[in-house]
Length: 88
Image (tube, rainbow, N blue to C red):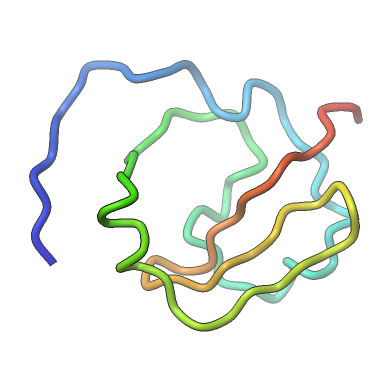
């Protein structure tokens, strides 16, 4: 696949803006995540548009309990999406 990147000095602040307690998300424990440090604040490495995103997806989706992220298989590894509670 070919993409035309835009290189920016900064797009946003650290994401997430505070550490996330992912210890209760058993459905993610054995997955090879695209970002294994997703729960720690850090800079964004890459932002993909919808034109590219769909091409990266593979078969496989894992839904955990309410309030936990959904895992979707992709060529980058398992990617996470969804709203999570910021309470610890």
